[in-house]
Image (tube, rainbow, N blue to C red; front, side, top):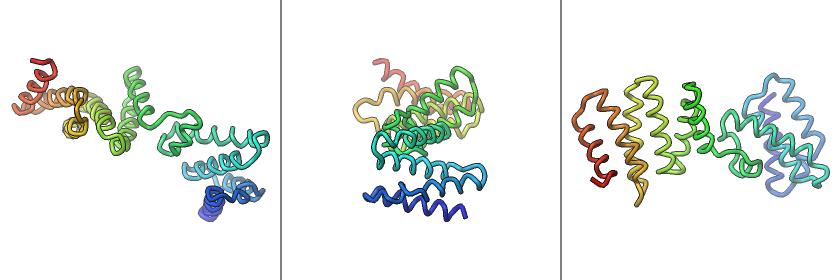
Length: 215
């Protein structure tokens, strides 16, 4: 039942994207949404479809008639963004002034610094993992910082190991200005040396520190 309703919505949204808005403007489209609400609490996938439908209706209607659909689309997309910014398409984030996954991750880390709630770091790491695939050096650096923060709380050696590896990738991807990534790598190596007492980590961290200070 749910799959059929979602498939019908998907087809209407796809037709709108191809220039035929009749499907999203039909009363049946809103009836599909009403039927979805009878099936229990909606999941992110359902909310995304409903938000997209209202956005399509807003785009297809005259400005004076589409305001209610715009407000509904913005409210739904804002709720989805709170759960995970990646649930909101980039162009929609831009249109509604919502933060990118990168900026949301940075905000979560700032909130973690204020509150110490570890779940905020977990959410930031999830966002930065995706951003690292797209932003390369900057995303990798942010991921390395978040992993190091989690290590400081949990003392999981795998976190500091991954942080070192991620910062190495960030340095390699940084081009002519790797200083921020090198600072992160030196910090991660120092933390790992404190845990494992591997001389190579201390030597590399020391060399990086000297290079960064111009010594």
